[in-house]
Image 1 (cartoon, rainbow, N blue to C red):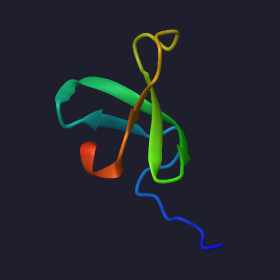
Image 2: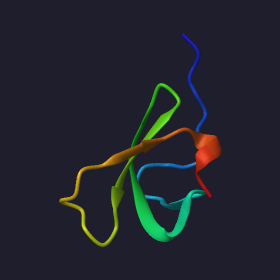
Image 3: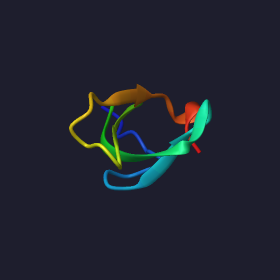
Image 4: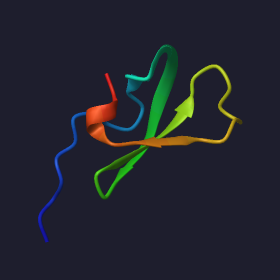
Length: 55
């Protein structure tokens, strides 16, 4: 099984292209999907993105 290379690592700060003013923190990268939590409200439900959707 090939190891997937990700552009962002867990703990990195990222921004979604659709809403670039909201800061996100990468929690997990699994099967080419990034699981992110909100930096200002970590208890809020997390969001998922493909790499092409993140800045």
